[in-house]
Length: 502
Image (cartoon, rainbow, N blue to C red):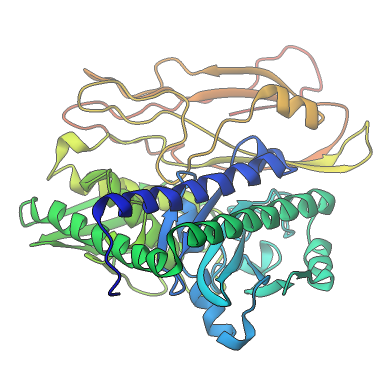
């Protein structure tokens, strides 16, 4: 674009975009119904240009970047310019058609018009605690096909020129458990996008349409230049690393994940071609999810000050083989994909530790211990679904201990407060504590994991869990010991115990 924009104004507009994404997140979490969104903040928001490039993503969930990377492109593939109008909103959750990276992540995208011209998209995504499928929570790691995991939604209009498409909404809700909560969460997502649209339009009024479009283009170019300079400062080198999943989700394992990274001048090449075929369980990773893992990891390692936009993706080159664990084909089950995503980050960090060791943390609780309860509340006689992913310890840093009881890498959710859990569900937390000595020993130790004892109160329920790092511990660096995992059964002396311990 020919519009001149100086560095100071560019920074002002960049922060405007970021504040828009952050305000969208505040609207979503303050308006949502489910604990997973309003309390644990399992959601993300972003601003995209009309070509689908990320302009700003708030610091929510890195994994959700993969959930939003293709939504604009899929909208453009399915709808002509003449079919996209002011007031439209699109909904999707299908990992193979521009939606999330697994079905519970529902994405809502809205085109932003200013003076009758399409100038941007605002997008949000939220992890719904159920979208149907064979188990409450829609997240069984032993599913064999995506068809077992819940309703699949390609990009379709949920609003058409400002009018809610009630028939589409009813179709979605009919396939979900606890659909009154789903309705409330979806309306929170709609409100979130309206706020984002309003703020982008206000920015256009303040700075001018041409200036906003010029700033979007320049922000992408600036991030690219900054990333290239950071890569060029590294020595040309090739590094490889392998880490493992405990199993394939069906009991066979361990499953290796391999990477080879090459630095060449001002570009970086990540080769994932030497990986196993997609597995029988639900641990498969889509290509967009893989890209999110790569972009997150390299930003952390190479230059954490990079603006959170798509410009810095340009010097990054990813090689994959379709049909493998880290680049699965359509129909493969993906509900438990986050454990694989976390291990992808682990191998990137492990490889880069050979090059920039003081910019790397050691192996972490890079798994998602997801717990899912579903049953009828004996007091309200209504069905409920309780979902939570439990945190663990982050790896030790080169000059200090790791952090205790935190989500790491591709997740950034909060631990659900006990008060919220017990208020909303017929469950009781009898203990929530740190596990002594669970971090790897060394001059600086890894962070500690969590023990959580949950009792089911006065009813029967369906329970499912997915977890990794139960057999193969996170790795240490520079002689530091591997992490330690210890489990034991409930030691309650009363009969009829209904405790679940994690």
